[in-house]
Image (cartoon, rainbow, N blue to C red; front, side, top):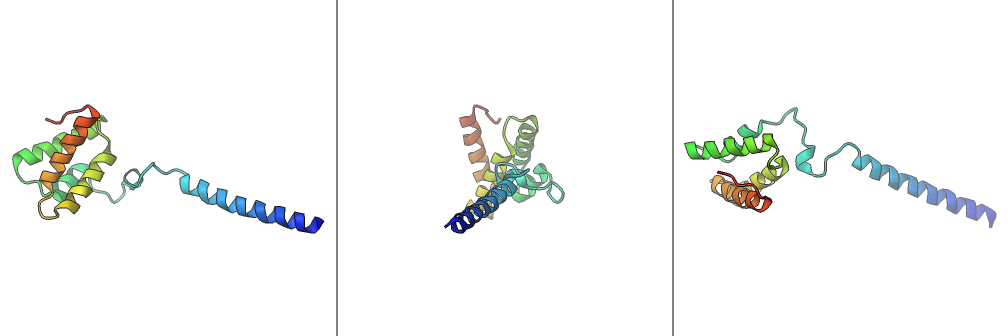
Amino acid sequence: MYARRIWLKVALATIVGFVSARVSHAQQGRGSNGAERQSNSHAASLEDQLHYGLRAVTPAQLKFVKTVVRYVDEGRIPRAMVNMVFTWARERNPRVPFPYFEFAMRELTKRRGTTLP
């Protein structure tokens, strides 16, 4: 009976140790979402990502992209939100994603209390 209790305690401690080690390793040094975990070593600049990824060609579109980049640099809007809207717009219409991006960014920033010109 005594050996059975020891075996049960050792087994339980081992399982708890493995679970806690996996959880702490998964949470160590990482951001809160995938957009914040991207490494910058192979990433394009935000302006290039938006310009080429959204196929912005007109002067008004390029001005909007530069405004979004400036707002991100100033901390008015989070980069994670821009990345999320960028991905959504490209999934929505891969051939012409810019109008979807512009609409969504204007709506989301308005809800956050910031307006894009």
